[in-house]
Amino acid sequence: MKIALVDSGIGLLPAAAALRELRPDADLVVSCDPDGMPWGPRTTADLTEHALACARAAAEHRPDALVVACNTATVHALDALRAELEPGIPVIGTVPAIKPAAAGGGKVAIWATPATTGSAYQRGLIEEFGGGAEITEVPCPGLADAVEHADRAALERAIGAAAALTPAGVEVLVLGCTHYELVGDLIRAAVAPQAAPDLVLLGSADAVAAQALRRIAPQALARTGSGTLTVLLTGRPGELPAAAGAYPQGRSLLAAAVV
Image (cartoon, rainbow, N blue to C red; front, side):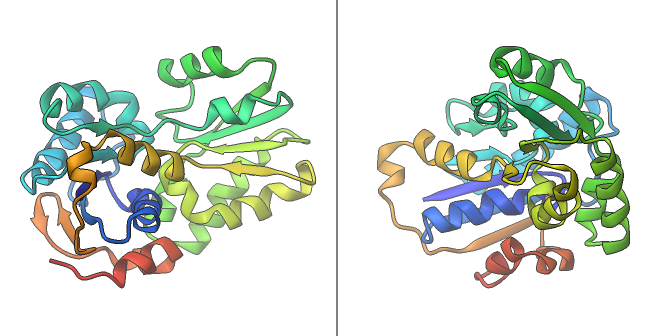
C-alpha cells in the first residue's frame, strides 16, 4: 500500500507520522514545494497550480490515496485536485477540528493562517458545526513559516502574538494549520496562563490519517508495503529538509529508508 501527502513544506509531517503509526508498512510519498512556498500569500489560482504540480508529481508514483496535508490548500484547491485525480486516486483534504471542538460548547479558539482565517470555507464550518460554542478566529501571521524553518525566535514571536489575541478562559484550541501541530507544546505553554486549566488542543493529523485508510480500496489496503519514504521537492527526488529533524514527527520519518 502506498499513500502520498502534499503540502508546501513540512506541515505534512504530523499526518505522515500518524499514518506511519497506524500502518508502519505503508510506503509514503511526500511531495513538498520548497521552490514555491509559502502558499498562503498566493492567489487561489496560483496556489491551485502549485498544489496540482505537487500532486501530479506524487501521482506518478501510483499511490493508493493522496492526502492534501495543508488546510490552506484544502480551502482553495481541493475541488481542482479531486477533479483531476479522482476516482483513480482518492483525495483526502484536511479540515480543522471545529466539529469536535465545539461539541461541548464553551470557549473555542481557532488558530489558522491569515489565508484561512475568515475564509468562507472556515466560516462555513463554524456556521455548520459551531453550535452553541463561543468561537474566536485567531490569525497567526508568520507562524507556519517559523515552524517550517524551526526558527525558535520567530516561533516565540508568532506564538506570543497569537496568544495575545486568544480570549481568556479558552477551553479548546483548534490547530487550524498542519504546521502548528509540530509545535503544540510551545502553543500550549504560551496560552496556558490565560486558558482553562484543562485546555485541549485539537489537530487534524490523526483524523486525516484514519480517513485516508478508510478511502483506500480494500484490495490495496490489504497489500503489505515495505515502509519506505519517497521525498519529492517541487517534483524532484530529494530528502526531507533539515528542519524536519527538529520535530519528533520528522525524526520518526527520517529514520525510514528514502528511495
